[in-house]
Image (cartoon, rainbow, N blue to C red; front, top):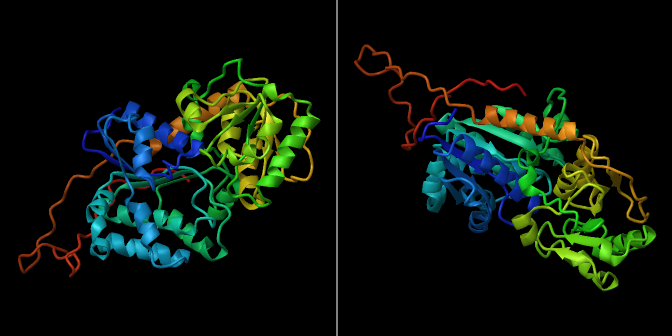
Length: 419
């Protein structure tokens, strides 16, 4: 069933870096809405709206890109999560505090659905991002809009902010996380699967399974490293030698432009003949993954995508408090990959790997069902005239604040989604 043309959907995502995983997730949701709600107005709030528009702007006929919430987070006069959240909520109530964002805040406060897309950006590594969660909660008070967070990875969490994230999440109508520690943090009940939002997007169009792609594939990041790029480069080179892989059988994938080339640059002269896949090629043609390959990847979404293509591999955890949780969430789902945390030890080459075909179908169906709940048709109550009072005025007729702010709208629907 298609949504009414007047529907406004407000998606929040860290798209536009570009980063393979974040772009993939945003693309998946935009494609879903293009199919189910082509007439809806879709706003994507991201820190890089220009670049996101270039990469994603043709995926929905009525999508626009803004950065309102991200600007609010950046402008908060504190680095403390509680103070950031409080400040963002205050500005949404009183846009004159940051007048240049007045119209952006008005659009935010008028959304029918406010949706925090999945990923690992709401945690202690980026404390200002708590303002995104707080902003969605506060904006929904004005619009009465449905609130959803899906496919979230919330660890590591700042110990001082645990109660804050739980309190904010409790205000959402739909809460979906991708790993067990995040579910435990929010006190969510058991679930058959905890799935990343990329499962919504990964179909044949995002994978290039040509048999010509090399036998062994690398994706090695240079950001968020605990032990430095040189150590990771040394491990990768020693591993290829231990596995007796000739350079002509090696491919190197870039998940974030340049950031994922810097480690390879340290030893590429030892791998003359290896094939390099820049991000632009991956985005235009698909992830070069196929059954029979062995991957060595630090990137979570490359792990996910390659496993969906039927490839095996080793997931290298370069930051235990963050990447171990991420990669483990996939190995527990059945990627068949080895999770490797000790960068001083050469990993054994795994045999086989990749998600089973049955799981691929199940995961996609589960995400489709979740998408249906997030963007279910709006149920609007019939307006009711306020009861007259003895003095002839309407009951609660002066509920707006003395500062001229509009009173928050009522909820347009009840909480219908189980957590």
